Image 1 (cartoon, protein in one colour):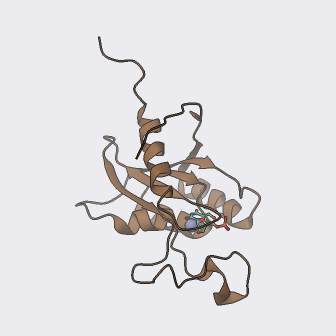
Image 2 (tube, protein in one colour):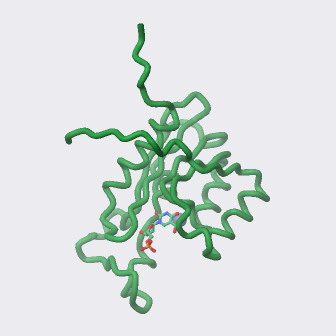
Length: 160
Ligand SMILES: O=c1[nH]c(=O)n([C@H]2C[C@H](O)[C@@H](COP(=O)(O)O)O2)cc1CO
Ligand SMILES: [Zn+2]
């Protein structure tokens, strides 16, 4: 008989998004994204980090500070990295994006323009921000479904 406690597709892909987030150097918020096609094949992954070639030891990681003193001008978001990292043939049209934090308005635009059809998110900790509200407005207008990830109960522990 086959084992019954295997993880679901949703758990698998959100697990990979969480694992990717663990690569982030951001001391405050680590975000991971995993984009999959209609056949549940993983197309691409990403996490938030400084652009390639920008030494992350020399970049600011602070939230506070005027302009260039904070991380915000520089960090490339997890979803955008996942979209831009896609090297496969074909496109992201019709795919789903698993993400550990609800996408900001800039990532929402990239998600819509790349043809991603569904966003499955874990945290919505900035739900009250204009950015998140703008994302939801655009997703609704563009027909991108957004779904809260609900299987938050399974704990997996392993040594790396
Ligand atoms: O959709 C997102 N994707 C994403 O990668 N991020 C990143 C940018 C920053 O590195 C971090 C947010 O930082 P903070 O929570 O300290 O404001 O998360 C943030 C958002 C939403 O704000
Ligand atoms: Zn973003």
